[in-house]
Amino acid sequence: MEFTVGGRFEVRMTPDDVGKRVSVRQVVQGGGAGAKFTDTVGVLTSWDDGVLWITPRSGARVRVSESSLVAGKVVPPAPARRRGPAASFEELTRVAARAWPPVESEALGDWLLRASSGFTRRANSVLPLGDPGVPLAEALERAKRWYGERRLPAYVQAGTGAEGAQERLCAVLEEHGWRREVSAETRIAALAPLADLGADDSGVRLARTADDTWLSRYQRSGTPGPQVRKVLGGGPSVWFASVPGEETVEGTDTGSGETPAAIGRCVVDGRWAGFMAVEVAPGHRRRGLATAVMAALARRALDEGASAAWLQVETDNEPARALYDGMGFATHHLYHHFRSA
Image (cartoon, helix red, strand yellow):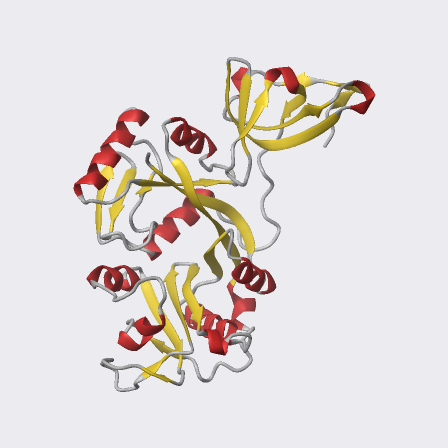
């Protein structure tokens, strides 16, 4: 990055640039010719009392002392992704929300409070797209009361790393004592190449509902209650995939008596196909089953008119991230769940 004019460092931004994407350089050690610097690119979320706070793509806020600032400037919004379909932050966030609908919801202005008896943070968090209709501090207190009435922790889901994302909201949440608990990437890809990946998926079975056998492989809940089935079954057009396994499971109502070797879920919503709950039994991994499941679901989504794929993966899930890298998925933005103090 270039900070200099005529060979001199310059700070070409002011507190009036709060809310804009900036690039800054600060000295972290020494001075003069032996000085060491560090660079940060992100949204300038505050500049008060000699301290700048910048939220980069990762969502982890960076503190910059004004006295250590040697260069800085406003930079253009993050460039559009070169891989995958074009999509705005809001479009993708709304599509993902429709694919994982809560059991119960209530509007707070343009915000949506979501609850599902604690089954996943996504279905038990505030979706803050737009204006809550009241001052932010009041909106957060109302959210805490709403979740408290349901004996649930209060979470807010907020995104970073794309034009129109919510870096400033993330900063305000931290200022109010909310702490980032988990982060995930929302990734996108073209759908047709994904459908071509599964050379042999003849063993993949597709169904409209998640029966007891499918749920026996699903690891996100113990004994699935009604809220699990309702969330999983919700969405515009939902498909469940499974690959038969060899383990006997008692008490299933399907007659197969087998726990699947692999499962997956896909929600088709207009041009988008979202992939979730892709799981493979430990003894069946590295056999291409995850790819086969996703390819079979992708072909069904193509039949329904979809052309673009999305999925979400936690930032610390390295095996899954590597798998999706190989499938051509590129990170569009990150989202974070903030929990109230």
